[in-house]
Image (cartoon, rainbow, N blue to C red):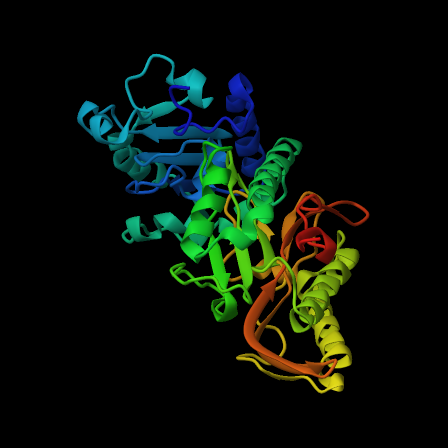
Length: 417
C-alpha cells in the first residue's frame, strides 16, 4: 500500500508493471518516430492528478516524470526526479531516485534522472530525420527544436478509449459503487431539505467504497436549478414539489462512472413531471437500442434527439402544452466517451465522426430543460425544471451492454408506493 495512490495497480497487484508495459508496446507499434510524454508539472490536492495520457502508459500518478518512447530502437525510458524528503513531508511518499525497487515497481528497465533529460534530448535529436511525433504537452518546451513537431494525442486516444478486459472489470465496479450510493439516498429522498446535504450524503456513500475519489464534482439541482446544465452552487432549499436532478460518479482505480437520475422530492411525480420524464426515459431506451459497433455517434445522436422532439410533440404540444427552452432541439451531446477521465476525447470530439468499436464506454444521457405548462384533467401544471437520465453503455460486437441497468430509473422503481 506504500504507493497505492502514486502507482495505480489497476487492481492487478504485482502484475500491474507488465500490464502497463504491454500498453506501451502496443503504443510503440503505432508510432513512426520519437514520442515524449510529460507528467503534470505540479500536484493539487486531488488524489488523481495526472495527465491521462501519461497515467495510461505508466500508471504513475505524480509530478516530476517524463516518458520517452522510441520506435526506432523499440525502447522506452522513464525520467524520474530525485527523492525529496521535505516535499514528502508535505505531500506524502513519491516515486523517485534513488530507490532500490523502482524498476520492479514501475516495470521500466531504463530509468534515468530527470535532470538529465534536456542533455539526453539534445543529443538524441541530432540524429533524428524529419517528420517527428511528440505529445502536445512538449511543444512549449521545444520552441528551439528544428525538427517538425506533431501531435500524437489522437494516436494515443484511439488506443486508450478501448477498454481492455481488466478495465472493464474496473468500470463495472465503479458502476456498483454508484448504484450502492444511489440506493442509500433513494428511500430517504423526501427527508433532504437542501441540495448541499443531499450532495454530501451521496458523495459520502461513494467515497466510502473507493480510495480513488469522485469522477467529477457532483451535480445536485432542485427545481429550476436543474435547467442549468452544469449547476454547481448546491446551496438551495428543496421544495416538496421539486424534481431533483443528480449527476454523479466515482473513480475505481483509474476508470470512471457517470450517472444521472431525476427524482421527485415528494416521492411522487405530478402529471406534468411524469409525462416529461417518460419522454426522456423512452428516448434513452431508443438510443440504447440503436447503439452498436461500427455506427457513428454523431448520427446516433441526431436520431435520438429527433425521437425526443417527436415524442414531445405527440405527447405534449399536441395536447396543448407550452414550453420555453434556451435551445432549439439538442441541448447537449447525448453521448460522450468515458474512460480514465469522465469526458474522454474532449474538446474536439473527433470520435463522434468515427465508428464505435467494441470495448468503448459511452454515456447515454438525453434531457429536457426549461419552462413547461399543460392542463391535465382540468388542472393546470406549470414549472421550470430539468430532467436528465444517464447510463453508461459498453460497446459490444452486436450491440451494447448497459452497465448501469441496476441503478433504478423506471417510474415505479423511484416513486413511493
